[in-house]
Image (cartoon, rainbow, N blue to C red; front, side, top):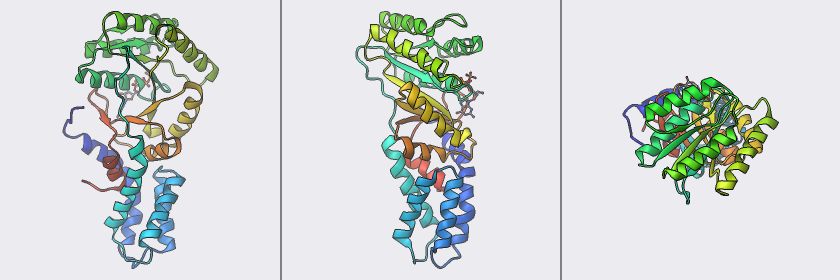
Length: 309
Ligand SMILES: Nc1nc2c(ncn2[C@@H]2O[C@H](COP(=O)(O)OP(=O)(O)OP(=O)(O)O)[C@@H](O)[C@H]2O)c(=O)[nH]1
């Protein structure tokens, strides 16, 4: 991924809102001689309201109390411990999406509720794979709304990649089938499939995904290779319930969290990592196709802890 200057600033800019809640409490610490129970409680509360989740907040509290209790402690040292703890949670799930399927194409289904940034993420992933010299094709499997098909076509044109699409209300499984056939015939490495991803009707979604799987299975039993759930970080705790539901109905293999630029809710990433242990492939930090970033555990942990490296 190309390291356009400024992405870290944007991320830190977003996370600074998250960390400023921590800052309020941590700043008070400097004047205290020791880290007492009340201060630990305050830190734990600050971590919880930063969307990190109660489990992570409790484990950080535990760590702070074990290591430093009764000692005078600087705010920087507390931040460092918070960063280390968060890094430990995030590192195991920081797993990029690799193109390694044989035979090709690798089929990636992208799911997520409307407005989560699904379409933009598809464009960002396509751009990422093109940069790695893979041949990319898109399939407009979200036939539920004409606008979704149109939007994906615009991205395909901008990216210069082929797209398979049908009519509004058409059968998404047959579009995906056609996509795999054409991708195979033309030596495409990766087929990225947009899906309707409506959570309002779980049975419908499950049926649709099952049908896609069945149809794909006729061409390649390994497909789909990845089922990537796109989440909007600005929805905070709601993103966690989405993971829970989608994981049940759609056999999610990994996550991309979007809109981490300019949200105070980035801590939810940590809660998701701790609770679900699903790979987090990348993060979205803006609206252009270059705005997908690898998920770097220690950078993110530093941003959340308010440490600028
Ligand atoms: N700031 C910011 N905006 C984003 C990001 N990703 C997507 N968006 C914006 O969020 C809005 C929704 O994104 P889409 O990609 O259209 O989302 P979708 O899930 O496909 O939504 P529907 O088309 O409604 O199904 C658009 O205005 C995007 O530009 C991101 O990482 N950061």
